[in-house]
Length: 152
Ligand SMILES: [Zn+2]
Image (tube, rainbow, N blue to C red; front, side, top):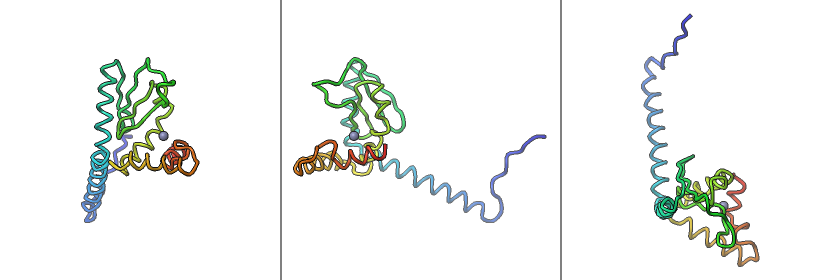
């Protein structure tokens, strides 16, 4: 027996359902476009860093809503206190393994950029300064980092 694909809705309300889905899709695309635009000043800086790293032999890869950049030979150490850093929709990592290990954490930061846009870095730095003034750790006790660890 040949299975037929179910037909779409028919009848007087069918057009309304399709229009509603189309409107929901348009609203989703508009929200995504706004998120990219709002985060774009930091994404632009991230792209500059990405292109410099690419010129130095780095690897670029678009995955899960962000451009990941790594330089294989680069290792964290005294000169580099971080394994990955997010700038808008660009995630810079010391190597691909670090990018894979920290992907969920850094995607939380991407969403924070999408929410706060150009304000994100100043707010992040203020939050670190506030934590430090209260005798807390400026990185570990930064609320943006706490949220990233919680939501990763
Ligand atoms: Zn983080």
